[in-house]
Length: 299
Image 1: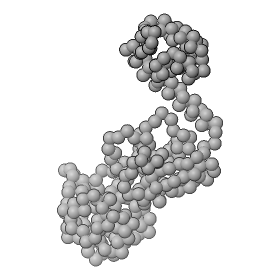
Image 2: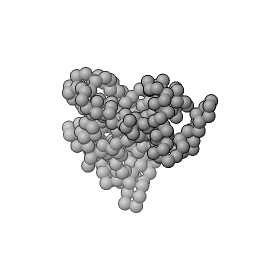
Image 3: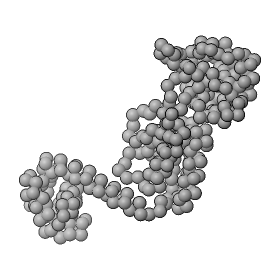
Image 4: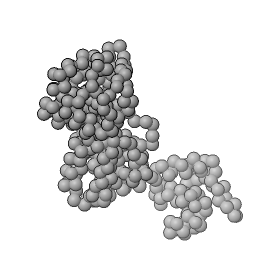
């Protein structure tokens, strides 16, 4: 009997609370289970169970060994599952979430290519500008932008984006270009509540530290697209994330201002519930998404 098999028997006895129950679970004879545990105790030089005619209970040493044993057996099971996944075509449903604009511009194309490469996989992409519970929503993973709170989620950083101030060329010709954040109160502003949670104060970084400026927006919206559309139309300056205005900057319909005062970049993370084993479809998508996003945003 190999050592892994012996530890499997020990774990079964510990979890079932008896040799006979463990024997039935494993499909072994009670005598074989009893001999395996006795041999393990002899090899380790410790007593793992206190035995009476009516009960079997783990000793303190037994409890410590059971915890470690579960960990080792779990890792072995995960290793075997991963090897099995590697031999099989990924299949099943992949569920993920991302911010609306970032998801449309940068996550949806990755999902489309992934589905083209793996025909047996289906996907559900939830685009929201708010944080949702992955477990409660039945999601495999999420893309989060910003500092992460402490949680049980596992996170992989895939780059960073900037929070900047943008305006249309027509607005800047009409009202002038601000040179310092303290110039903003004299300007018309469009506030996007998800990018600037406190609509009446905008934050910047100067040579001597952070700068907080009190502002009175002419328009407050809860949609990045609406804020960008208003800025393109010349309504005023808006503060949004750099990836949200890539197309407008390239087309020349928006210009970046106050670049030297921008706050520190915000990290992009892929997060997923902690666990020892991820299905092949999830693991492969994470690997692809991290590689593609880092190629764009790891600067």
